[in-house]
Image (cartoon, rainbow, N blue to C red):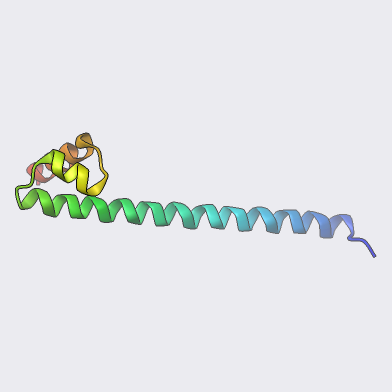
Length: 75
């Protein structure tokens, strides 16, 4: 016995919702990982480590490290 049109639509909607939730979770994980790297970079800046070294260690760009430094200097 096949699905009714309404049931098919509900399955599609449910599938889209699940995909949206998965994408949202993934974005949240990525954002958290980025924030953790930035926190490590800020701590290394406070310890006086060079921007280039911090970039190598964290995987951030030198520009990102410089932006973090500028933000720290303005606080």
